Image (cartoon, rainbow, N blue to C red):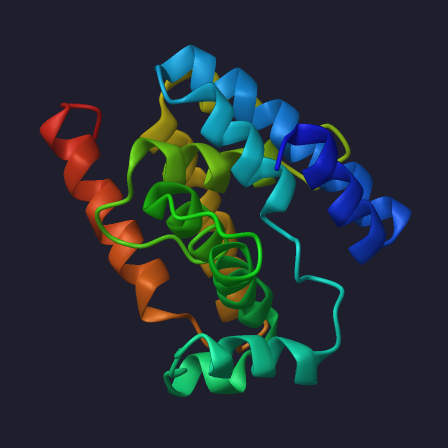
Length: 193
């Protein structure tokens, strides 16, 4: 499939607001990929497709994950907001026949992050935070950090997410905590903490 076909596919699978978000994430992903030397084409594809399962029914997400051999852990079972990323990674692998692990993982971990993220995974994680339509408190800080130091932007995003989840007394996936720790170690090694 080409870019136009991916855009057509997501346009059919989601409402206008989510479609605009996906286009904007792809745009931000391309800019970040160029800035940091990641594969621009992969960044654009992953950005377009990152929320491809966000607006499908929960039972359909569960079926995609089950058919794809995914076994949800306890936090994932109890946190349906994480399902779209997992189902999306399976959907692009099994239905769209994308066999690039970097694209699949960028989609899979764009919500939680994980330890040992690739450059592309980090680009999609941050692109989702800084897309043009985002307007949360601190988004301008995040946009500046995104083009100064990818890991510093990730730390800011993870702190934002973890603080929000703890304030609302919601579970935090172990991947997010592992990602946070990994980013701290990376920033320490770079002498940035």
